[in-house]
Image (cartoon, rainbow, N blue to C red; front, side, top):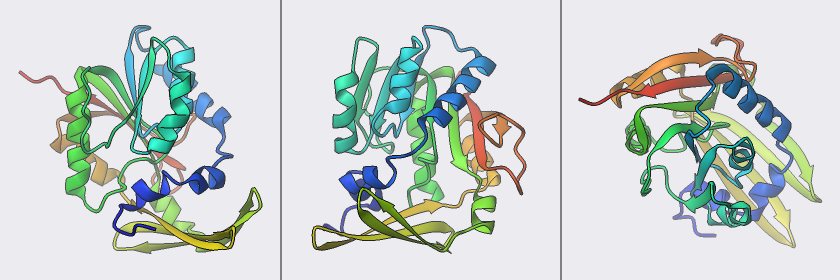
Length: 248
């Protein structure tokens, strides 16, 4: 195992990532996306970019509603699984959020299910937001769906075991240096594996700072997929809607 790779480049490109998280509820995702569409009523010709799209399930669903969607992800494996679903208005590409080399602009950028803040510091988070701003049209919207770090930390399950497809995964979690770190250990075919997930425990104040600094105006904040108000102590999610402010 190449320990020089960043954790997300190694783990997300592993087939074991998809085994462990293969049961993530698409119905919940569709419910969330439907609520967003009903509330914000985007133009039917809106171009959407799905940032850190994984295998593209959310992109595929949005495209089925008639939107022009591009999904990007760092994982070559995930994008290879999404590619067969491409059509005239649905495209997938391998891309690092720190360097979005795309030749078009979008009206809406989505970053769903805590796929932000995988890096070591706020400076890198700022760089990601500037990259997103660069591929958004003036006045375009950014949605970030993040966990509510306060609630996650308060209810942190330090140790659990899950069995998926005959593989027993041991999950250990801790808060360290402002990050929630999950260590994933298991054996398969007489070989031992260990991976890590490290996500900055960003609070709403961190996002307010980052968005303002990178030229986004925070429009609304929600605390769950029903789009109820955000409550710092009790909400499950921290969902932010921001607008790319006009330049000039």
